[in-house]
Length: 471
Image (cartoon, rainbow, N blue to C red; front, top):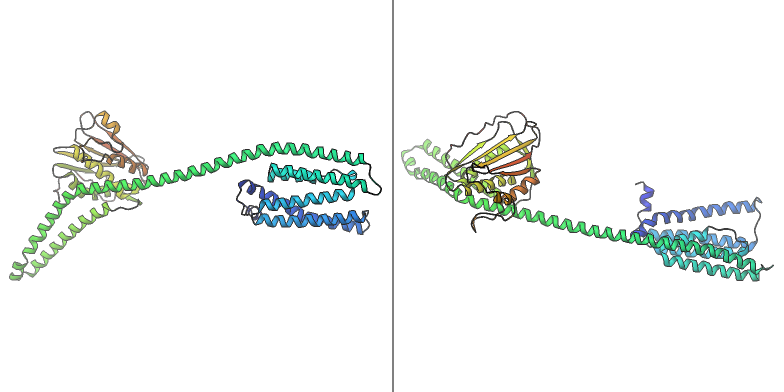
């Protein structure tokens, strides 16, 4: 927007219709405030230089007075509009201009009035800018002015024939009346359309505000839901972690119990080695607790780019504790990186939720497998999580992603795990599919867009079927 347009659109006017009319009215007022004095200066120069016949004194003085009033009203009205007083400014200008027209007509005589566009302009502005009521008030004011001018014509010297004055008044009034009727109907329809448009705009704005509130509330609810699922997964990990800590503390205690004997025998190197082992075990315990605390913390989603294969490898200690001793864990990830862009905690939560469901489905021994691979074009990551459980019936499979749907006994499941997984993956631009082959078991396939083309291998090998002992 150029500086002139910006200036014309800056008056502090609240009414939207008036705000649309303000630029044109300001241009019109500037025209009268600048053009009229220039035109009058040229007119006076022509008169006093003898190039133009000098009118009568009364007519000349009336002409100068009306021009001064017109110029002053234009600048004052412009000032009022710039201060946001749109109706007052326009009403002042129209009233003064109508008065000037009456004075001009009275000075020359109604019978000698030539076709004048100013009254038509006044009627148009009154109707289009101010409304129907000001339009009819303007017509009434101009009609009263015609009547006064017709009466004054009787007292002129020499007097003007009544038939000429009355005929001219009726002719002018008829034109003004037709223009007023046309404007009245047009303005009524136009303003009704504008009001309906404004009502729809306000309704749409309110709907947008309500929708924004709903979206914000949904995001808050989803954040709380994800956190509750993280806490649920953390609770399921607690028993396994307690076993971990017990093993670490047994190691620490065993080393600590050797301190007196080592000190008595003077085995300083052995004592130092023992203390180092205690430090290693302690750090291991701290790492386990830190991992659990970080995972269960309530945080705002923070998307980052990370290697999905590395994240799965680093998650295996928590997966071992979640699955327990009776379920075998297999990880299969390629050597090349698989970069994805999403919240890493949410990625881990999705895997833990699916692993927890598989553990609950396999009542005895079984195997839980996770494999990750990229497509041939290196644009899509496919994450496959499968188990040896009994699978799902078609009815259960059809409702598996519904919130609060669960086949577990009361108190053992919320029915939110797969719903949360689907929302997490969808927010990252991916999809989630469930498959239950007739042979048994359940396979969850997650597809996520890769953040960048897959590069060459970086030295991380594929993990073979898990045969490592549980921590």
